[in-house]
Length: 98
Image 1 (cartoon, helix red, strand yellow):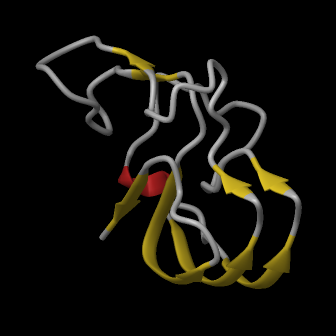
Image 2 (cartoon, rainbow, N blue to C red):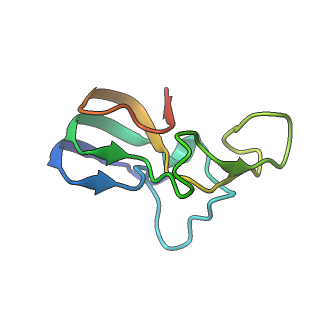
């Protein structure tokens, strides 16, 4: 397992997604290993890309109803994966903590 980092005091207009990954990380293979250790003080007009602008997190379901990490579900919109997160200027489209 790799070492994931920390994000602190980030300012941006928009943030598409926050997770630990690299060029080989597939949208249908996200697991708890892809969590960032800690996120704090994130200031942005939007957090989590909402490709169809409907205000809900969209994904392709591969298993039981609802998005689940490690199930083969494919994230379409942006999400935030973290062990802990505090102080967002706007709530993320989908946030998975723990």
